[in-house]
Amino acid sequence: MTSHNVYVVDDDQAVRDSLRWLIESVGLKVKTFSNGQELLDDFSEADISCLVLDVRMPGISGLDLQQRLKNLNSKVPVIIVTGHADVPMAIQAMKAGAFDFIEKPYSDQLLLERIQCAIEQDACFKKQQTINDDINQRIDSLTPRENEVMALVVSGHSNKSIAKELGVSIKTVEVHRGNLMSKMKAKSLSELVRIALTADRTLKQAENS
Image 1 (spheres, helix red, strand yellow):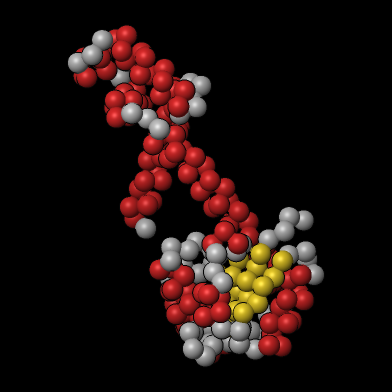
Image 2 (cartoon, rainbow, N blue to C red):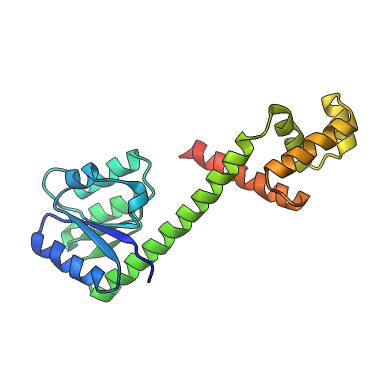
């Protein structure tokens, strides 16, 4: 099984030890913290695949910690562990973007299943983020004119109409088009359109986050 890091934050030593044993029993790496500040001091987005977080803790509460991570633009899936009396708080955490909440007492199998689902979500997100970063780097390599040509190409314009729009020769458009296809690593028009659409979605997501 691929190794992933699961972080556990709980002020109860016995609970931390129990969760460590349980999660490590299925081949996952675990790191435990007794409070939210300890986690923040050691926080690295790339190192975490899932965060298991108790709601009620002294100092920084689970909800406060979740909000601080959100302020850091963290996308790590958070599983809230809560007592029956804390369900309203857990619902609040879900509305704030938590992956799931599990009520105490819970079955070991349920927790492991939810952790695995969270890890899969995190892996998909990080894979897509890598793709997005690569596409952005390709776009950054384009000249302003190549950017203009690409926008017109993916909008369905022919070389002739692009030349007229930009006031250049068709030959010049062909050169720019060839350069941008190479820089964007697109082997066809359909592939260029797909890449451009992905970049557009990424930009809109960033603007809305």
